[in-house]
Amino acid sequence: MKEEIIKAIQLRFLEDMKEFNYPKWVNERNNHYSLNLSFSGVSHVAVGLKELTMKYTGTPVLDPFLSEIMEDTLIGAFTCADAVNMQGMAIYADFVYNMVPKELWIKK
Image (cartoon, rainbow, N blue to C red; front, side, top):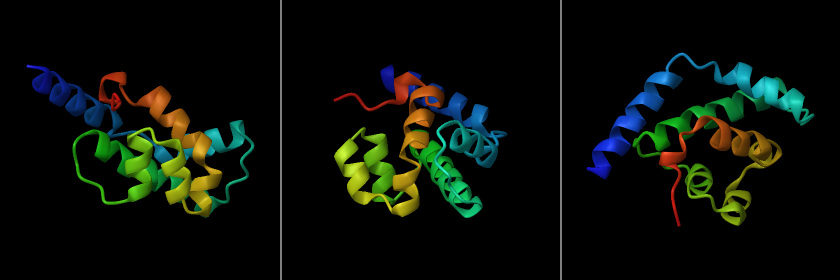
């Protein structure tokens, strides 16, 4: 039963995010946190968040950085992050905390 509920939450989250403007959201957070990400940096993080959304909805994603983000492994995430994702780490945390349904967070 729990698996059916999780699948329903994943589908609803995916549907909610279908029209989500990742670059705009990242740019707003970039300005909010004064991260000074370049245009290409904003685009890079936006693509990462879109892939992270897919990972939270059950689609396998091979990127080890995104796996560490999803598994809430701070040290692992920093270890796997490239320079742009390192700079945008606050944006990833903001996205998971404020956008991803709590039921999809991995519990340890």
